[in-house]
Image 1: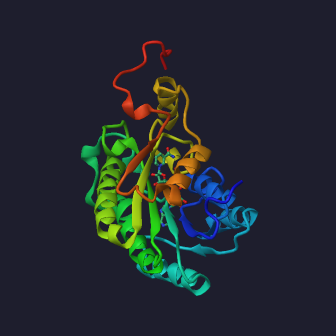
Image 2: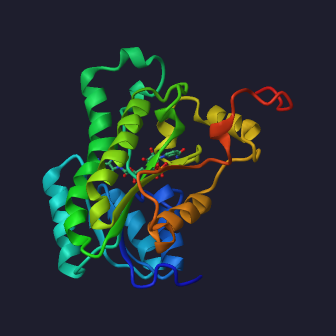
Length: 264
Ligand code: NAD
């Protein structure tokens, strides 16, 4: 524990359970003195998120479906009723119909494409629109991406397109908000076994492949993503914006299978 985030208030969106990347980030911020509010999607997840929030001293836990503007407005109104400002926001939300997270990207229907981009990319723009007016003393906005935004990955398909749009959105938002001392960044995380990841075809194989071929010869943890997020959300990173920061045990630099790795 420390005091890097003392006096800072932040909203963390996207905790589903204790394995969520959003939870790794929230716990890291709380351990450094941040006050954290949470949003969750649907009553079933609310029952999981409330005790997690309570474990770090938070009772500001609100429903929010980012596909529904009225729901997003209501969540931010509730936060504004409790807090007079906001210092950071974490967007750890993504969704695509899992029927299209396997097979060929070519076969993606329009509705599945638009839904993936709406929930995984536009929602970041939408929540930034509502967070920015609360960040009168500057702030830090953070989202989560994956290497499938830049390279072909088996089964990632329409999510790769949504993440590419999300990473481009980070750069445009950073330019819009820089003069207001509001920074916008993404973390490109290596594969982690979460609820969302389990929807991707052959995810166990992807985890094993990364473990064997990453320079560090292991997979990254939510605690490690939390550590990197802490840097980007804190005043340590006041000179950093528009960045997509890899937290992937070095996997992004790999150009070829490690010949020493066993066959899988
Ligand atoms: P997770 O399942 O724990 O979290 C995903 C969250 O998105 C859930 O809390 C879910 O409720 C939320 N969500 C989906 N649709 C929503 C909607 N309409 N409104 C509100 N919330 C909604 O999984 P995670 O892996 O922690 O995912 C967090 C982020 O990290 C996602 O953007 C994901 O793409 C990204 N990411 C994950 C990995 C990985 O391997 N797990 C790697 C890189 C990036």
